Amino acid sequence: MSTWPIGVFASIDAGLGVHLEVAQELGVPTIQVHAPHAGTRNPKAAADFLSRCSKAGITITAVFGGFEGESYADIATTAKTVGLVPEETRAARVKEMKEISDFTKLLNCDTVALHIGFVPHDTNSASYKDLIATTRDLLDHVAANGQKLHLETGQESAEHLLHFIADVQRPNLYINFDPANMILYGTGEPIDALKKVGKYVRSIHCKDAKWAAPDVRGTAWGQEVPLGDGDVGMETYLRTLKDIGYTGPLTIEREIPQDRERQKADIGHAVNLLTTLRKRILGT
Ligand code: MG
Image 1 (cartoon, rainbow, N blue to C red):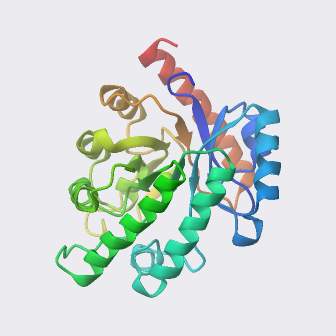
Image 2: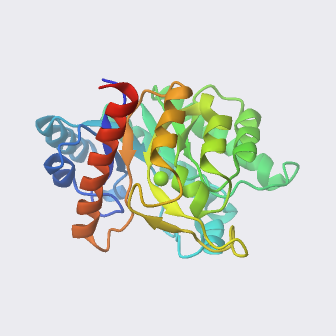
């Protein structure tokens, strides 16, 4: 694969991402996909989707897990409901994430990813220690499928994420870096964060956002906006990716599934912006 192929976040069935046809119409050669619901995670569904991708000349670069009951309504609800952190659903979700890893193998893809949730700050707590054990157990299953696990950024500061990865002590744990999430969640200046976690970054999102007002930053969402219109600074972001040696896909994420027309238009605009910046930075 060439350096920095454009990508887009897509869905196999319902979900936040665009449909495969949209990726195809936009001429995008790679996708990350949101894992389908349990009923659709079977060999036939995988073979059908792979065949559609292959006909469209599209490579699947990562499969994202998500779970029933997750809500991003506001930051407090996200902390309560998202990922492997909530204790009531932890066991069931890790089991489901293993099934998603198995489904990902059927898609011939070596990367699964997820929002793990708000990792507890008290690293001596029972909840943190159990989360470490749970993550190791998941990573061992993922490794047996020949895969890596990428943690989506945003819910932790760069330092906290590095601390967690060091504590897990597994060689197949990496990061999917999303600069807009650092702004949306108010967890840190994205370029600084990228430099800090750079050695673990194996996939990324191209998404943009504006900071919430300083008095509510970290408790109220920032605002997701079309690529190039926010506070990330896309050229600086791509130049920093080059500096850390990142050569993988530039996967565009635009989370407005309620407005499919605008989502497609914004992604088309993002493809053009990234193509221009890539030429300026890499000369190709
Ligand atoms: Mg993202």
